Amino acid sequence: MAPSGHHAVTIYTIAPNTLKEGAWSERREELADKLVECAERYIPGLRAHTKVRVILTPEDFRSRVHQRRHAFGGIAPVMGQTNPSHRTPIENLWFIGSQSESGGGVMAVMKGARKVANMLVGCR
Ligand SMILES: Cc1cc2nc3c(=O)[nH]c(=O)nc-3n(C[C@H](O)[C@H](O)[C@H](O)COP(=O)(O)OP(=O)(O)OC[C@H]3O[C@@H](n4cnc5c(N)ncnc54)[C@H](O)[C@@H]3O)c2cc1C
Image (tube, rainbow, N blue to C red; front, side, top):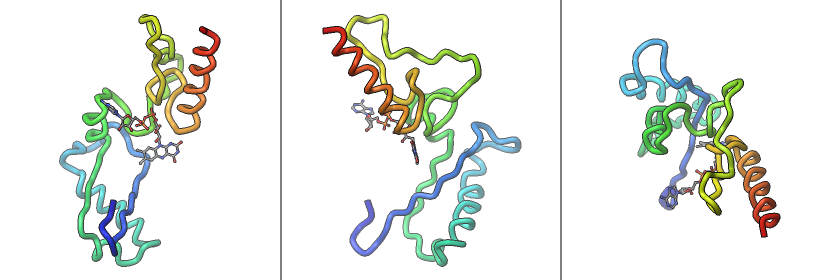
């Protein structure tokens, strides 16, 4: 991603869907500054050497991936909630990935994909 002689750094944390005070759109810079401040303990001079800064808040993630709640980790885990099944009402159309019943995170997504692959083989 970064041009020659530069580096790309991703700094992220778990964050709430909505803030107790204010909105993500108003407080994005302030909260990004806090993250950079924490990162500077490990990467001294990070702020001074930053050429381009891209801030993605939970709101931004939601608008990019068309989710109503939650952000990068997949479907929000809610007790008692049934997540969308791999098997859809449409024949031969399967639903996998972090928004499906297997949930978010690479391991869960892979597990769901494997399960569907096995179901497909079983279907033949
Ligand atoms: C910053 C960050 C850190 C993370 N850290 C971890 C971690 O440490 N461990 C972990 O387990 N999980 C982590 N995750 C979560 C994990 O990355 C996701 O849960 C997982 O990648 C979801 O897999 P997926 O296949 O559902 O979706 P994705 O990996 O998002 O894949 C969807 C793909 O579809 C493509 N696509 C979208 N629309 C279209 C279209 N119209 N046509 C064609 N292609 C399209 C996208 O470009 C993308 O390549 C992290 C996520 C983020 C954002």
